[in-house]
Image (cartoon, rainbow, N blue to C red; front, side, top):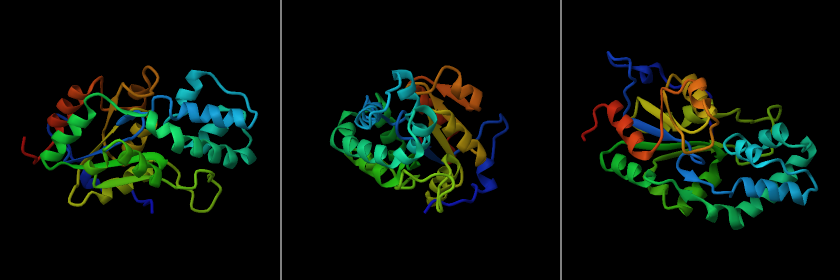
Length: 248
């Protein structure tokens, strides 16, 4: 269950240089760990076509990677609310059969995870992908073993804000994942979209933005990312700068 509480204040500790130390790392999934490589946008286009709805351009489809799918369908396509459950059903079937296999782990990410794990850094995933599906994707790409906590949105993607039990977004997901990392008091978030940054900040955490995902130019900086990095070695270097109490 997704917790509603914010991350404890103890996680906000900063050094004299203003840098927030950490002893755990939370990662977004799509666009941060795994490149969906058309597995998401292609599935959305397939579902819209099957329902006789217009298919938006590639830039709009790319913008739908990251946010909650039901919200993205309503906000960025011509789909009506009554059509969303069937669109998601069609999309999910296609994604399970074809989309997951299209994805690829971003260059250098596996090495970053291996390095952190070997040094005893607690690792978790906080994604707006449905929680059960997030586990499936991680296993499909051989990443599940790196993480001690995986949290996502409700498995019923058709839920709307007015529905009972609706999980409102990244803020609550990040809080739950952070609290689940046993013994960790100072996690940091790594993500590729503004909602990753905003969700981290709402919990008193810094977020390292990565440019290899789906953010538009300036999106991460405008949202308040602590720093934005362009490749896996730069990400590891920034994490090393912030890790506290972890042997190198």
